[in-house]
Amino acid sequence: MESKDSVIAALKKVSVKVQEVDFRQRGYDLEIMLESGQLRAFAELLRTGNFYLSFISGLHLSTGIEVSYQFANYSFPCRLLAHVAVDADNSLPTIADIFQGANWHERETKDFYGVIFRDHPNLKPLLLAEDMEDLKPLLKKAHSLKDRDALTRVVKNAEGNPPPAVKKEDA
Amino acid sequence: MTTMAEKGEHRYVLNMGPQHPSTHGVLRVILEMEGEYVMDPQPVLGYGHRMHEKMAECRSWPNFLPNAARMDYLAALIYNHGYVGVVERLAAIEATPRAEYIRVITSELNRLQSHLLWLGVLVLDLGAFTPIMYTFEDREKILDILEDVTGSRLTYCYMRVGGVVRDIDDKFIERTREYIKWQRSRMPMYDKLVTGNIIFRKRIEEIGEFTPDMARRYGLTGPVLRGTGIPYDIRRAEPYSVYPEFDFDIPTETTGDCMASYLVRVREIEQSLRIIEQALDKLPDGPFMAKVPKKLKLPAGDACYAVESPRGELVYHLTGDGSDTPYRMKIRVPSFSNLSLLPELCSGMLLSDLCACMGSLDLVIPEIDR
Image (cartoon, rainbow over all chains, first blue to last red; front, top):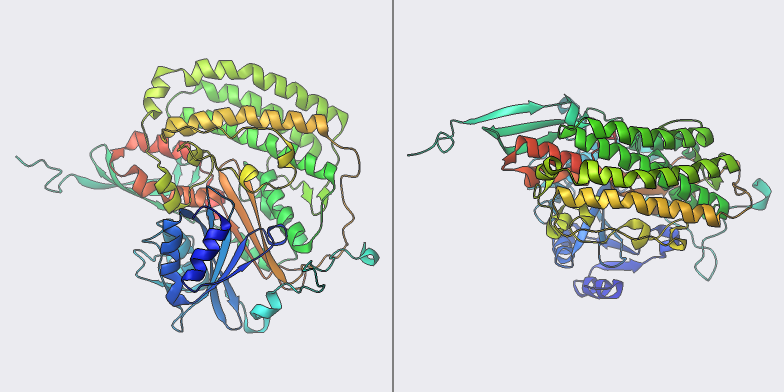
């Protein structure tokens, strides 16, 4: 893979839902929705495409926990963010054998959200103390949970520009 | 004849830290040793964990500004820059041109003092006490300049959404220009005192083999990555602020050892000086703060903002829900990924070389623990 377009083509070939977003508004180029079954094949594909793993993060929604993976490339500008909803038993397959850097990021996500990464070599608490395993500090209380739609940008006008955030009257 | 090591009789566990001078903070490394050789180093994190990501979800976004500086105490302004950058991107606000220039000037001064501290302590870790006295003399000059304009010496809270808190004045510009001249006059001395020192070279040449493939597998960024020959710097790869307006090089080396990242960092000092010089020359007039609503709410949606910290790629990923409190904020810190390759990198090396490797990674532990 040597350009953003070839990445999009390669992802579409394995039927991954990929959407181009405006870098100036979002700070990344591609937003990807994955099924948990596709995760490992997706990571393998990026590994052969010479991507590196930037971070793994989580998001607690009213529909459950979503884990996000950000990848970028040293050779050409293409930052992508992939979202995967966890399986019913609150677990996901590990990618620590494909991207070794995922090891700590997955342990951190386990600390904060309690997501189990299947076949992870060492899923012990990383940032939290060992007796804090059940704390899961980033889980939200039921009344403050929101769904994806409430966290999605509303595009109002036809050109696809965001609505102007700075209103004259509150300035 | 089988050696004792082969019989497994010689392995023992050595605990390093959490209070140890060469871990530069409260980092603990459990070392499985065979004689003087480290067979399996396992870092233990979390001694300085404060859960900044949770704090971000519990307070309105302006109240998180002081937190940004408290993750990496050596690059507080760059953490400021990333945080105001992500809020501006999400809320579609633009800082004024003068503010962007001031941000770049102060961020680069911040990067310089971080590199100067690293230079001093790396050499100190390897047993040479003198150079840190010289680098701290230089570093004090930067801290004095920044203290005058920001009001603090390390944990700056100087940038705001839309601009900066205080404008820089002629005195700041004059002192910064004097400092640039001073720092340039010092570099030949460091070349002779440190770079050309045979004892120092023997301690870091061919120690630690970072490779491009390892970098991709672990998400390595910053000077250590550039030491493997990959010219990847967020300031150039995904230009932010006004960096595209300056002419500067991305120094690289090809050997990938500790010496390579050492040379990259030392040459980056000159590049930062060049950026500051150009920014001072081109500094536009005008307001240093844009008009921003007093009660700004974060719109629904998410945004990332990546900046180049002295240690590599720093990313803020902010998710807003229409209120003034972030729904989620993820902070990707460079040292976290950089340190995670320690077990693979340092297995089988001498304990004293492990210290050289950790010094080369330029670890800042509060950043890793967050």
